[in-house]
Image (tube, rainbow, N blue to C red; front, side, top):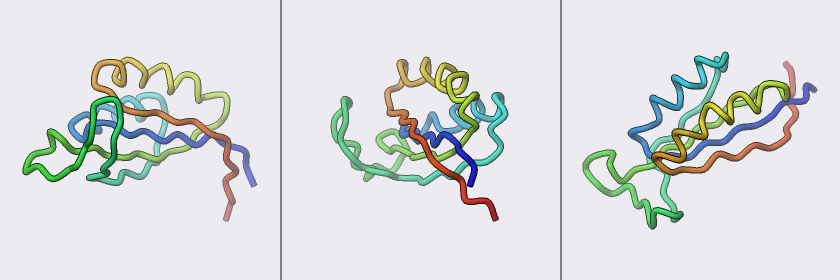
Length: 97
């Protein structure tokens, strides 16, 4: 197994392309996006039941080496300040196959 950092980002669906562009600019080549996630946070309830993406959130899961995590977090932080969202970083182990 390989030690890695797990990064989870939940933000406005309209901002997910910008999040992905930032990650790719910092060398992240793989990620998973789950669209239309719902919940409640500092911006209130995000129900995802609107016809547009204005009130919808998306969830992104990716990983990186421990030495790269600070660079990625600092790249994402301004976007989260501006548009809201959550970025969680945790330790993980990658099961190599």
